[in-house]
Amino acid sequence: MKLIDAGFGNYVNCDRVISVVSPDSLPVRRLVQDAKNAGRMIDVSCGKKTKSVLITDSDHIICSAEEPETIIKSIEG
Figure 1 (spheres, rainbow, N blue to C red):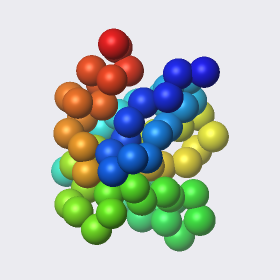
Figure 2 (tube, helix red, strand yellow):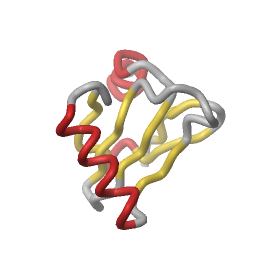
Figure 3 (cartoon, rainbow, N blue to C red):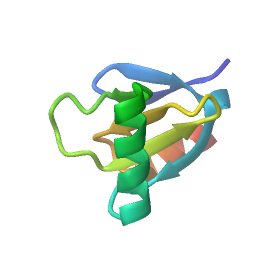
């Protein structure tokens, strides 16, 4: 099991992450809102602006203050 840093000392299992996307588009914002209403959203941004959204295979949505490029580099290396 490989853990990646999602920001502010929070770690996510890399094997469970399906996608890392930017929260700017309307479909992603809708996905985050639906997950929040269903209790499947995890916010690890610690009050900062959400810069990336991690989508997991368990339909959980993780909002992070880290840039998507930074998270992808953590996954690759």
